[in-house]
Length: 237
Image (cartoon, rainbow, N blue to C red; front, side, top):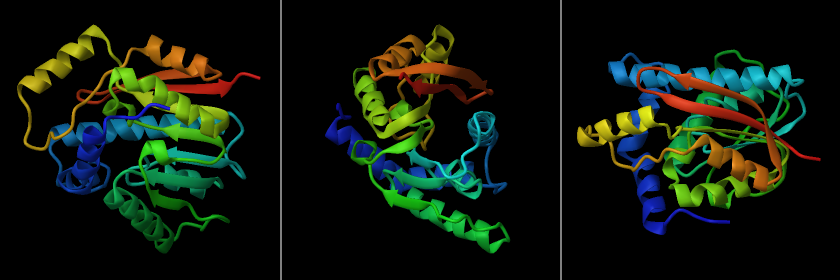
């Protein structure tokens, strides 16, 4: 298993526990205190989550299945999965994010949602520290923090946790998106504090194949400022 560099990992953790948490908590929330770009990203991420939930429903639902949500953020995927009957183990490198996900889950139940048989478990840990075995492993919009030479190790580690299915999303490395990313780097905003990495779909699919998984579904979510390629892969028997 390969890891991100120690300094970079600490930078990501520090960012999402401080200014990054404030920014992304607003983006992933329902407050009106967001600008046009943040609202666009919120809507794009919500589309990705909705696609994952639809895929899982199409494949028989999640009642009674174990799911790992690696890099859970504020619980946008973990909470609905738990409410649908999955046993969810969720984690995030940021204690602020994991804590907010727990708070949002509790607020959802307090607002009248039927509690699942098994409450989701939210923990603070980096991706490399995730362990155990699960029917399905999900990892949405996390690979952007992993440089190209570390991506394969990340995919292999996630695959080692999944008995049946791995659902992963990433920012695709195409000419058009690479140009947009470069423009963004030339005009950085005050809240940009971590590096962003794009990945070629062929490389990600090759890493999945090396780990024993075959891509069965794929979709692209593209808004004005949010670009995410979503893959669902099944373990090859």
